[in-house]
Length: 560
Image (tube, rainbow, N blue to C red; front, side, top):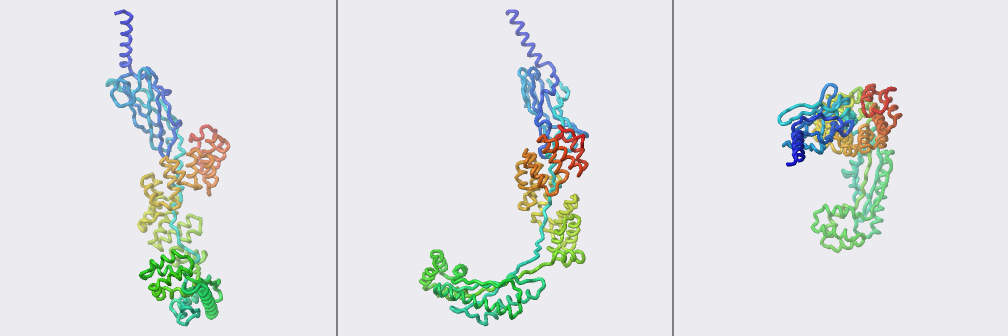
């Protein structure tokens, strides 16, 4: 063999042996990049992907490396899932990197976020197994700090659902009586105004006239003729019935000295085909389907009557059972029952709340914006009406708004026992679960509360905790809350987010802090500083939060 060829063959063999026998060199930070940089929360988690670009001649063929991401922060650390990187001669299931060409590896990382992680460093630790020889390589830093804006979503600021009172200041009641006429007649017979129906109606009018909490809002008379005979005759007949009934009622009101009765109105219907059809459909007449078919086929009243009269066997039944019921005047009185005034109810609550109905005492709580006063009213409501789920639900609502979440949960639980199917209670129990981080149970309860208006904001917060920003925006709809604005910030719709913040009814420190984040993301330094000053003036803790927040890393906050 030629010496040159021999030496070349020996060199190649030595190179192959070297690539397997030498120890693995140290990884360098510049081999890796992390997405996103800096790390950023999605919901309440910190997901990231570390991409390694391993250079050629680095990954020896018989080396297996276990790379473990580790997040270090003040007071603790958390390890991610280890990933195996291996040379091409290793029999394992790791990501293979060529010795000659190098290669790319992916190392995922995810952990639940804690506030102390805002200042943190992400490292990779390396443990090497090379033909049974184990050794560690120096860790490398691959990330620094976490933007935790998504965690500003707060279930604590969601308005719990109120179980509303049904108090109505004015309740309208209607009473009616029918005056019936003989065929082709319009005179009011004595037996009709002595009927029980009319007597009851007249007594209601007399009582309303005397009662201090009632008023007669109006009296209406509607008169009818049955649809047999000519239209011209029936028109004249129905009009006479209207006139006679109206005159009778005017005289009756004068006789009873009822002077305040709103307005007396009247009308007439020449042929009551609508009433005819209704009575026939409810009757037991054998050929009623045939009659109803005629009504649907012919719209002209005279043609209808002609065709029905042609049904000679049926018409006699109609004349006996149906038509007499259509010769009448209906007198209807509209009476308003006027409830207690706000002042009366407040005085009763202060002196003897037992004299208030359940709806009245629940209504009293709505007459103040003071949460402590509301709590006092609902507490009393639970004592006066211990079986009122609404009282317990609403008492829990006030405690939740006061930040006493354990006490609120206890009241919601009592309400649940009293009304297992109440959607308002499900909504509020779901809110408590959301606050406690029990997301699966929260989702179940909020789903059961579908249709309750306050659920939209709660669902929006739930979706934010899950990192589902698009669903959160859909749930919030047109809500004007900090949480709704946060959803738009996370979807990078900064103009819409600012519009929502501008419309928040009672802006707080978080409102201005979110506005400062919008300023930072749109590189508006004056907006950053002015909004942070407002936030800090309302909550001094915001100063440290802002200085630790990487959202503001490009800005000098010393002036704050």
